[in-house]
Image (cartoon, rainbow, N blue to C red; front, side, top):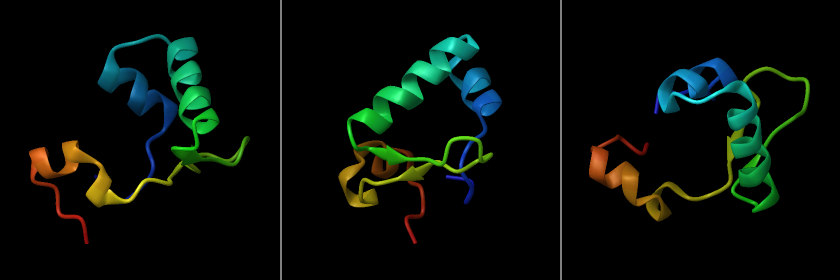
Length: 65
C-alpha cells in the first residue's frame, strides 16, 4: 500500500494488538505460503499473492501498478 513492507510496530498499531500477536500473524501467513520474509532483516516481508487475488485492494481503490 505504501510501497514498502510494514514494520512489526506498524502492524501492531494498525491492528491494535500485542507484539506476540503480530509475530503469530506473521508466522501463520508465512506457514500458509502467503508471505515470505528474511528473519533478522527489517521490513523484509514479501507478499506472495497476486494483487488481483486480494479483494481488499479493489475495495480500497489502491493502485496496483
